[in-house]
Length: 250
Image (cartoon, rainbow, N blue to C red; front, side):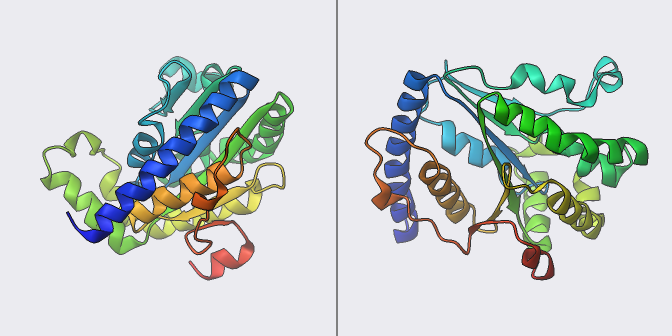
C-alpha cells in the first residue's frame, strides 16, 4: 500500500468518527439534513456517497438516486416526485442528482421544453426556501472534473466489468456535449446560487482529495457534540463557494 493511500485511510477514519458524532447529535436533536450531490457524469457522486455513509446508521440515513421519471411522474408538478424523499426529523438524506436534472441533463439532451426549463428557474429558489423554512438544512455540492478526466473515467466504465452497471446511453453524449454541459452548469450557478442556498464547488479530478475535503467542509458547517475541528481543515482550492470568477477560470 502506498504512503498516500495509507495517509488517506488514516484521515478518512478520523472523519468517519466525526460523521458518527454528527449523526448522533442529528438524531437526538431531531434535525433534518439534506445533501444534494450534482456534477458531470463520472464525477464521483456514487463513490462520495458510499464514503460518507459507510459507517452511518442505516435506519436514519437514506440515499435517493434520481432516475428517469415514469409517465405519471412526467405529467406531475416537477418537484412532486422529490418531496417524498426529503428528510424527516432525525434523518440524514443524500440525493445522487436532484431536481437540478432539469437544468443539466434534461436541458442539454432536449428532455424538457424551453418553457419547462424557464419555469424550473422561476420555481426552484422558492421551492428551496420552503424547505429551509420547514427546518431542512440543505447543502448543495457540485463535483467538477475536466474533460480529460471525464474521458478517462467513462472509458474505464466500458472496460472494467465491475463498473459496467454505471454505463448509460448519455455517457458518450457527456463528452460530445461537454461544452454544452459547461454552459448549462454556469447558468444553473448564476440563477440558483443564493445566500440561503449556496452552491459549493468541489474540484474532483482527484477522488481521494475530493472526498476528504467535502466531508471536512460539511462537518465544519454543522454543529454537533464533541466536534474535533482540528481534523476538519479543508483545502479552499478544492472546496469553495461559487463566485462569478469561477466561470472565467473553469
